[in-house]
Image 1 (cartoon, chains in turn brown, cyan):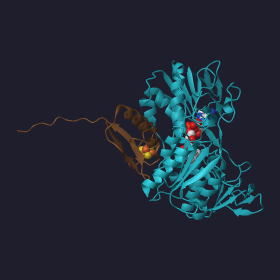
Image 2 (image 1 turned 135 degrees about the vertical axis):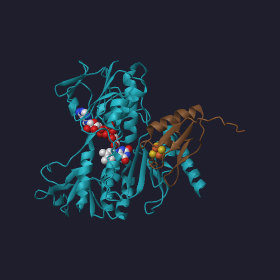
Image 3 (image 1 turned 45 degrees about the vertical axis):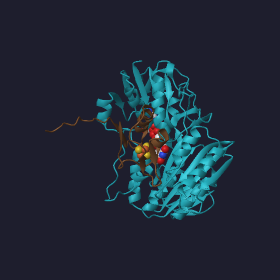
Image 4 (image 1 turned 30 degrees about the vertical axis):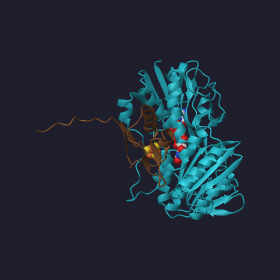
Length: 73
Length: 407
Ligand SMILES: Cc1cc2nc3c(=O)[nH]c(=O)nc-3n(C[C@H](O)[C@H](O)[C@H](O)COP(=O)(O)OP(=O)(O)OC[C@H]3O[C@@H](n4cnc5c(N)ncnc54)[C@H](O)[C@@H]3O)c2cc1C
Ligand code: SF4
């Protein structure tokens, strides 16, 4: 799972931080900082709630698809 | 459960229909709205939406979703421009005039409407701000120039004043009470953040009411109860809002400053739940009946109410630490919790400095509220502490440690 933030949309209101304080933090300038990239199951639930609650719909959760590397001769 | 009806097509109503579908409800969903518009976001209406935009282009209308989304993705019957006129709980029917819409579960999310200045109906140039139509009318008026008189020094009135100052007009706020925002953040802090107006060139007159608003066709002046007269080309009322419940008279619901509900947002009448600005419920976090007028609670209650309505046997209470934000003159003001306090303590900043302000509210031995100005990194930490029932001593200790970490 990977979180992406659309910084064009985010207005730093911090609702995400209040739902998942271990993952999101608004900094002094009002910009959102991601504290971690990979999530435990418990955090994932909180992050899903944050994605749904963000007033500007700035957050997205992606499942990371790893493509197997192909050995070249 | 076959038919879900949601009355009020704004934030709480939107979240209700979205949540129903997300949770897999496959029955019929009807969304009834008084306004002709699709659901849109209100907070921008008193902020960026009133600006001219950099290239003189108006900012876009803040719709949440397009029509296709409601019809195709959510499979919702949209009845817009159709105010509900009655609720008949015995027949489980919502009426729009003569037309009845039957429900198994209904979420009432009719929000609130702006209080307007009485006796000004025939005068142009007198505005209130609640809807998109109101905001477009006000923005057009602002293009023609000031001076602007804002009646009411609350959050929305202050934001309008800030937008009007940004365009360079003379702006006066008339506030009837001795300090603005006393009910929202307490009288002391209301007086403290009033300093933002003085610094930014807005005149704030407190403790005086409006005697008359005069003009021939278009507004020309505002006469105050203390005898002063203010010239005005635009008058905006920011005098609060009233929950939209008139249509429920005679329905048997308990109406008292909103629709009175239990902890699960249930009205006590089978199948009928309420959410958003219109709902008044016992907030378990503070153990008192509260009616929120903020974005976060409307969104969360819309989702909670519909879940409880569709599965009453497993209904869960809705508890929250209220959160409100407001933007004045480019500064962000944030408040969490409740303002009824035995003590209000500054832990960072002071009235006469224009850096970060962090102010905490104590009731008994508990932290119950926090106000920040220009300190977006702090506010949610206090919301967490209030949520966890933190003691005053712990809150002050936390504040000291934050302070030390920054030093
Ligand atoms: C200008 C402005 C700025 C704001 N800024 C902020 C902010 O910065 N931060 C913040 O937290 N909150 C802010 N708010 C408050 C926030 O927007 C509201 O709390 C939120 O909109 C409430 O949502 P709601 O769905 O409960 O009600 P509403 O948004 O009031 O919507 C109710 C809807 O129901 C409709 N309706 C009414 N009666 C009927 C009927 N009989 N039948 C059908 N439909 C009906 C109404 O027309 C309306 O469309 C602001 C509000 C305004 C007006
Ligand atoms: S809730 Fe949304 S807008 Fe607010 S800080 Fe988080 S991502 Fe940004």
